[in-house]
Length: 410
Image (tube, rainbow, N blue to C red; front, side, top):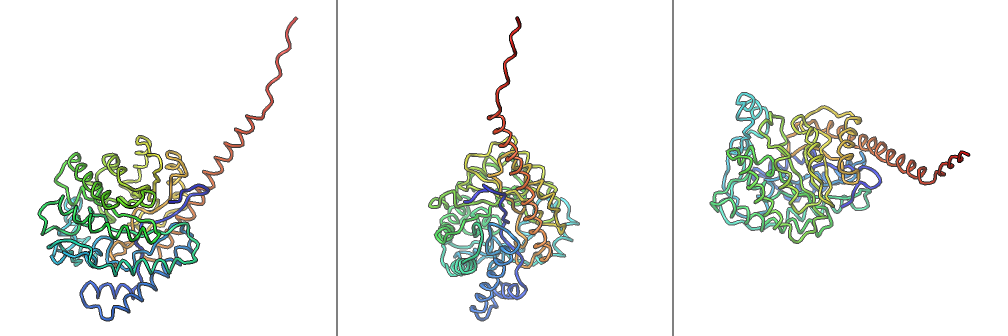
């Protein structure tokens, strides 16, 4: 995994707006009404090629496939894993965040105006195995082809963590959360290792380590939730057993939606558990109104040697286009705490975590990413100029002639 050695590198969380033509095919696929599979696969390849081109053109350093083929960052696994023939209910009812429950009027408006209102969530109703590699092979082949000869610092591919799958897809078979996680861990290991073998950085999406507190385990105390999170990290590390930590980044978030978020667990209460995951880089929310202040956590928590932080310096739930100067400020204040080489500028979350659910207008997404690149350049000039000035001063101090001794008095 590359670090910000000569300048601040840029990346994002994963999902990017999909073209309308592909969205129609994804909806048909989810409804079981997809006709010629070859048309869908050709559309995916075309969309990946275009999304790679756009990322490179705008100047993003660490790029991906935009999750073009996936209906969402977590539920896509039901096409690849056996055992998901059940029904969890509608998103927002089966997995309703506690913060929205506290404001039912807003929750009703939120889901009424959202395509998520009718998004069906499968449930586990049988033994889990990784039985269909075709979708994964399509993703890998599409991204490899699209990035051949492209000037990008690195390429990553995201995959759902066992914990976030358990958060969205109810267990109706194992009857025990630990057994359910273990089965998911064993199955997802195949996907993680395939991504690694393909030569991509692996990003494991782990909202369960934060968002899980106010959705899946809202009835637990913080101390009790930490125990659940520790279990989720343990099963994740098991699945990552054959992959070097240097090739893994972890995404942590509290839910990519505009809501109260007053029930969000604080970063300081979970970070000691999160950093135990077998991942070199930690991507986390650092720009929205609920979590921007938490960069200060790193003033009290020492970043483990070798770890890298990917702070979100763009809010993925608002159509405000951040000023590059603000982006630079968010980057430099954290870099001044943990070291510039240990910071890669990112986004709070994905811009299309569920296909077709775009809180941010697609054209504005690209304008925001442009602000990310410009802000990183400003931060780089400041951080490296300051370092150069310090070097010059140190050299000058080292070569300065010693003062002449005072003449002795007679």
